[in-house]
Length: 230
Image (cartoon, rainbow, N blue to C red; front, side):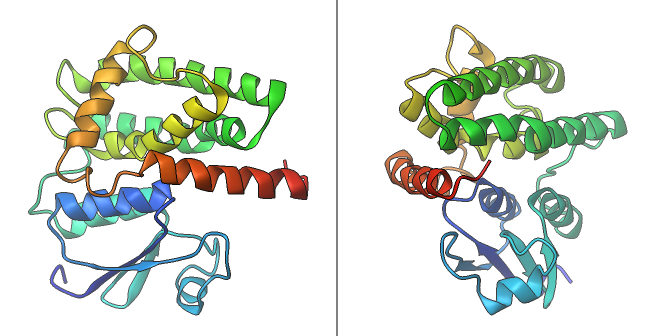
């Protein structure tokens, strides 16, 4: 099964698609990548492969679709078990990593998204909330890393990928709102972690280019504000 053909539907701007690409690189899995247009029409293959959410990423393995980035990470870890592990082996550590990954996606990301799309006082408030969440994640890093380089230990793992996929968007937020979200004064451990994460061989070729992402963020914010979305 592990040798069957692999295809990934993604978008270069998507932190969620980046998660899947990092995991595939970690496991040295060859795959076909198909780019989707986040601002354009969705392809038939995407709608067919993910009819519930209609979003990237979708991993297609042996002609069977697996949607949702965190689900994809766990799937890759189980199917290509011979490669470096993504999830911790200890049940409690694994549960802790899943808890913080859920926090990132379900709560913290909402503040980051608002800080990118909003303006004025709303953007300022959302940026402060985003920073407070990163301070909390600094504490989580201290617990999860157990004095090692990454959340996952000596190598990047599940929680590293979950948070690290947003580093490009964090930089965009810093530029747009003239703020510092991850720095040596407020989050010294995350500051060092971010540099190590971006330099990792599984990450560096898929990390978002900040300038290009910044221009996309302006388009996204303009579309959001013109439509009056919340």
